[in-house]
Image 1 (cartoon, rainbow, N blue to C red):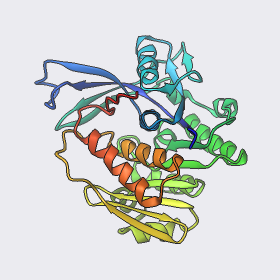
Image 2: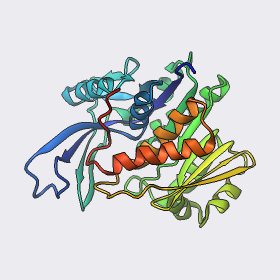
Image 3: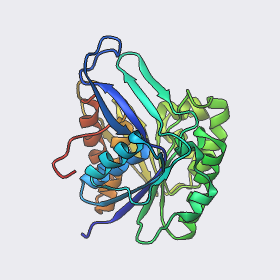
Image 4: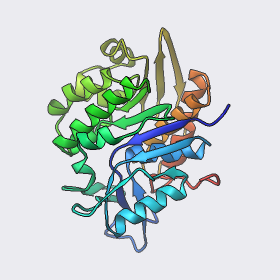
Length: 296
């Protein structure tokens, strides 16, 4: 089957992480990498042999140029990225055992707006992938997200949406109705069972499906238990792989990337789930969001 094309849109930041999985206060050596939910997905899809485009804004600064170069080295087409000379590239620091520190306020990507959405071309694009993080980083970025989804749907391009609720950015009470509306506007939705329970008080995969009955393809992830996909009238569960976890951030993006790459390759629902789990398992064993693929 010929390679297909995924377009991902959303913020990517420069990411600092200890080379060894130890707290920042104790670490001696660090990695400087690119990290962002949507571009992570694009990199995983590119590694599988499909064409992956990424659109966003980066600061016209050293970090922004480095992020673009690193993503390009992973096979992601960054030719559509806007370099903003008025606002900086965001930064985050992984502190193993202590969470993540974000320095993203006023970032170039937070200034995404409807004009950016109107400039996006869907020519040759087979699927658009976005996430709820974009809705949380600014009002204008939220408007960008709504518009770019609407334009994709109008162009006949299926929309993949990862709920990706980030509690440090907005409360569950504020996020819940916004993320529900966005999920209902998508063709394919990824959501964690625990995050769905926090947002919408749905305790099981079946309850999430009842809340989103018209989404063509719904994937409910349940951590190290497994994931359930609802596609039409079909319901398929695949258990997660057992691995020793080094760092969990980025595993959800890896799952989505593996699933979408498999979808673009024409795989069955069960095969898509297994591909998602396999990709997530590899990411769980690293301190970064990325995987060193020979094909990237």
